[in-house]
Length: 313
Ligand SMILES: NC(=O)c1ccc[n+]([C@@H]2O[C@H](COP(=O)([O-])OP(=O)(O)OC[C@H]3O[C@@H](n4cnc5c(N)ncnc54)[C@H](OP(=O)(O)O)[C@@H]3O)[C@@H](O)[C@H]2O)c1
Image (cartoon, rainbow, N blue to C red):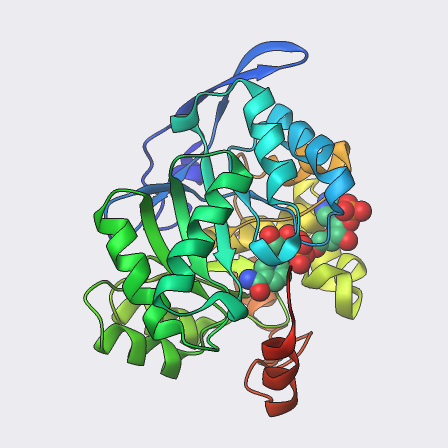
């Protein structure tokens, strides 16, 4: 690992973690920096997301991602592709303890007993006997009861770390204040146009919650991939806009899980540990923040109603 990667931010351990890769092309070693969560669990700072990957394509896509060197996979019950993720994991032959698997509980399954049942179902679909990270997908429904069930599963050793997603600071702090275990992670929309700096600070101050970016490329919205500032910064390093964005997030101690169904982009998105953005470049990207979602506001009543009515099976 380069000095740049070591200095990527206070949260990256700097301890190189060598994962053995049993790829189709043979046996090679990849190095993925890890970040330490508030319960001591180590999580790869860069993983792979499978939102909007159709179930029938997911097994191949995850197989390709594992062959490219990804060791952290982010799925959700609501993505409808946990079984395909599980098949790819099983077929990879990669030792379980070299993988970091995240999934999420959907709103309709919140509640204490239902959460436990839903956890069991996700585990079965994934073909695993424990999860690395289990998230409450949305701050909606009876998620306090879910959190109690998740704390228990965590204590029993069935989930290494528990966390939340799409929690704005008020909901996050309230959850922390009224429970024993603070979330290890809050996975929220985070990209150059919605940077979440103040939210990240609240997370850090309250229980040392780690911010994890969903939509690191804003799914290409706001013409992210042709943004002049990002293109210019990329040019200075001989890097793509995607690499600049991922590197910028990692230097901010943000966990990233970019999605791509294309092998060349999987490799490109993983190749961000041998260059470093300067302070000036970091400031320039900071200037792109609009302070608003590029998608929708999870506090919009119409959206809360729509999401709450969505059924995943
Ligand atoms: N918790 C939540 O509510 C939530 C919400 C959304 C997402 N997530 C998680 O976060 C992950 C990432 O977010 P996301 O999938 O929404 O969006 P994203 O990673 O910001 O963007 C994915 C898009 O960027 C394209 N892309 C990827 N790499 C590229 C590259 N190097 N150059 C050009 N284009 C590239 C992909 O196209 P191709 O696939 O064609 O390459 C795809 O269209 C998800 O997969 C999911 O695991 C969570």
